[in-house]
Length: 291
Image 1: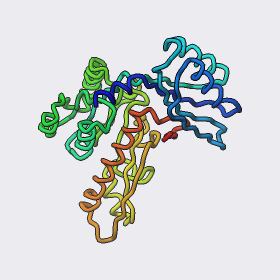
Image 2: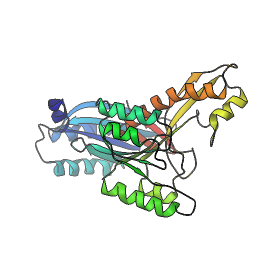
Image 3: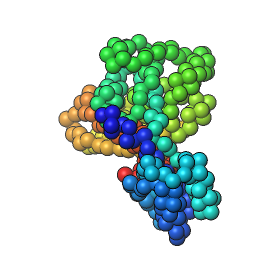
Image 4: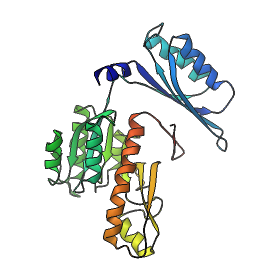
């Protein structure tokens, strides 16, 4: 495990989006090669309708001829020439997560177990809740657990305290694991593009509260779950991952909830995995996941 982690420390990921044109792939590849970087993976996608190019490059820095700053300058020249928007991430800094939860534990457990087993390439810094119920779960995994009781009157003050705590803990990603509170615009602005939620329906169907009850009333034959980035528009942020499971006329609301929990935790875990692996690019309220 130690050798494997050490080998990852010399890796970097470059995410690119820009108007599509000739020479993009070769320009980036030549620049990286010229500095001694070894490309390990390269995945690209072109949206023909929008005429937009997307790419994810994973490369090894072990035999770099120059230093990282010089490499970044070289890449900067290419990105400026091709009007690229880029994000360069070094693997030697593991991302830190904050999990927000209310009373339901299934999504929380899934992320905790995957982190413990090494499946998620990140560290859970804290679990934040508006209830005491799941403190024993946090203690079981040795994770700090903080409760912030929220009312309409104290919401702004509480969120400010939460943001201060997340900054102190150097949190990169906030994951809402069935957290039954709506985050304010101020909170989302501080963590723009870094808050992921699991919604227990196949969006855009059944937006808002009690989606399984809504689905039962409509007699649907499929229910699903959606992991998406959180924006100030409720349940309308860019969708990262979705999945469904079959239902029937014989299923009660309780049956839908039970079946849905399995889908929810799998969908959320997949979305978080892709986020931690820097595979997601967002544009026009949509996502491109480069796998």
